[in-house]
Image (cartoon, rainbow, N blue to C red; front, side, top):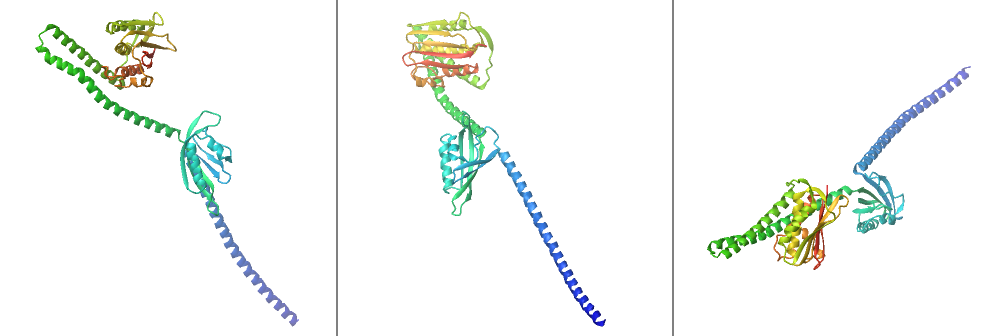
Length: 415
């Protein structure tokens, strides 16, 4: 019995030891599991935070693309193909090729000289000679006539183990508005430069044109008191009157042009019969032209009513007839108008004078331009005609050839 009890006691001690060992191991495993769980939880939280950052980054990235109206793309250097990844350009009618489009097709829609610059830029990136490239160029949409401006940026995104580029990443935006603004600025600069040139020409020309009749007036007036012969006095007075008229005409032309361009001269719309006005000017010109020249009229209809500014029409006709009288030594001068077309009527003055070379057809409407510098005049008449015709919503022009006469015309709305 005692031996049995001793045996049982020994077995019970071993069991306790085993139990304690199991408990200790279980405790250690539990502690390890707790720490391991905490580590997993921490890693998971970190990964979730990183995922949130990536999502936030993607949202911000997409927001930037939308705000800048960009399209993003990449080029496979080995395959020489392009794939667009995103397109947030503000005009949906932009060139958007399918994925893996060969670069030759991309280049084919670009216009010269931008195409050559872009191709060279790409070649520099493909060979690693450049890390970054930017070019502006025009794109014609396939199967249409629409053309727009594009501004592209590109850089090397990936390289192989040898350092050679294998992927090019880039972005493109439309810059039509920017180009429009640039053109407007260039136009404004050109207008400013032209204005400075015209001011210089104005001072040089007007001083000469005013000085000529003014010198005659002053000179003849100073000797008038010493002249006793009545015929000679009348001759001097006639010369003084003639030069005074020239001086007043120059000043009137300058003032008229200034008022029209400054918008200070208001238009007074009047309903009048055009043929009557032209006939009146033809009669006056008939008294002023040279002996071998006849002045007549030629109207498309017996009566043509026009509703426009009578004073401006009269100024235009007066200057056109004055030039015809001045440059026609023999032959005829005809004043007339054609039948109205689409609410506009063309009035013309045809002469058999010297004629004008084709290269001067546009220049003669510039201020102070004179085909023949030896013919008296300030060179303001035709410029004034153009300004007045434009102010009436019309236009002016000339049909002429050297030694074949000229036909000056202006078109204006009849209502």
